[in-house]
Image 1 (cartoon, rainbow, N blue to C red):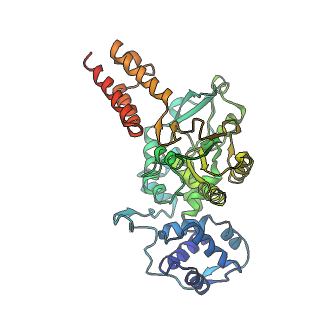
Image 2 (cartoon, rainbow, N blue to C red):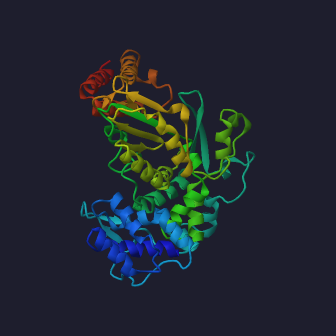
Image 3 (cartoon, helix red, strand yellow):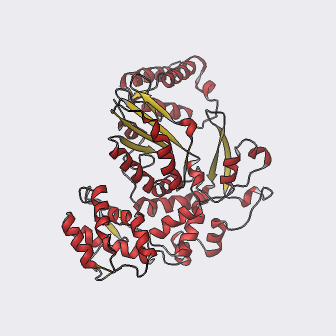
Amino acid sequence: MNKRVFFTRQLASWLYHTHWHYKTLLAVIIERVEYLPDDGNAVINELLLQYPAKPSERAIANLLNSSARLSKWFAATPTPTIRVLNLDRDGFTGQLTDEATGHTTNRLPIIDTVGDLADWLTLSLPELDWFANFWRFDTATPEHFKHYQYQLLEKRDGGFRLIEKPKTRLKQLQRKIYQEILTTADTHSAAHGFCPGRSCLSHAANHTNKRYVMSYDIAQCFQSIGWLKVKSVFLRMGYTQNVSTYLTALCTHKVQLKRQQQAALSPTQRTLLRQRHLPQGAPTSPALTNIVLFRLDQRLTGLANRLDLDYSRYADDIALSGNGHRDYRFLQPLIGKICLDEGVTLNYRKTRIRRSHQKQRLTGIIVNNKLNIDRKQFDTLKATLTNCVQHGLQSQNRNNHPHFDEHLLGKIQYVKSLNKQRGLKLEKIYSDIWLA
């Protein structure tokens, strides 16, 4: 475990076990930290600004870990240290009782060496090296040597998105890393994509019945998050350099495409894909994206609060909304600069600012007065179901979906969650398919 992670965990423990009040917290940090820099009070202000009420110990530690101020502390000499260790703390391994639910949750697994990592994944060391894929493969490498399969999907704007699907065994390893390591990390409350208890519905619900709704898109979000940012996640969790290197290797991928496949992608996409990045299709990528973008969410939340706006993010979709009377076009370069600082870029062509008399849509959901399904999306699904009644279910299965009936039923339930009456209409047509 590196020095900074140990420091932040111990400090988080001392802060968590005291009264959540400025003077008390400041007294604790002064008493427990040796070589405390002069701006120790600013750290307490950051904590109270982010968490007016006491959060979990893990949330305190994560905020301290991501603090730029603490980075400066550890870049200086002498570095701050904890005077007295809290030996009664629960730590970040073993079982944790969640204060909100009373349920036990898993702590980080203890993995000190590469051998420990191989044992934890039930692999031999040669197998771990094989899945970490440190070798240089090229387009001539046989398929059975590769760990990913590729699929090009056409986007609405005419471009293509590359889906990188890990093969079965690697996907199992990634799921284990996600379930037992990545789910222990806190995500920002403004992040709604791939977070338990949050969804595109909760994301859109933050922006209903607003005078202005602004939406922005992060360009090539997964591919923009490279090796160093992913490795820093595991290092901040307390894993050693070697273990973090292997965990990063298991969660990232470098693409080698054939010429005909490359032709469908933009030069920027090809450049990003040739470097180690988060593959779009791996179980670990969404969670790692939320962790890496924690500081982006912090900064944009602060910006929104300053301007009396609401902010949330669903994967690569950023949304702000408010009822103020002003020209919000100034936000685009400001948000773009913050994104650049955090290692991602905006797709400026997808920026939208919609007033209340226009159709305000986020992640395909209409948010003008309340959550509602887009009329065009509803009509398309209704037409598909009607054609299924008239010509048979498989006549509309143009993408050869293995469980097309369940796929349609899932879409109907989604519509029903937004608009019950329209959902019931679609359910009636769906039931007619089986009577035809």
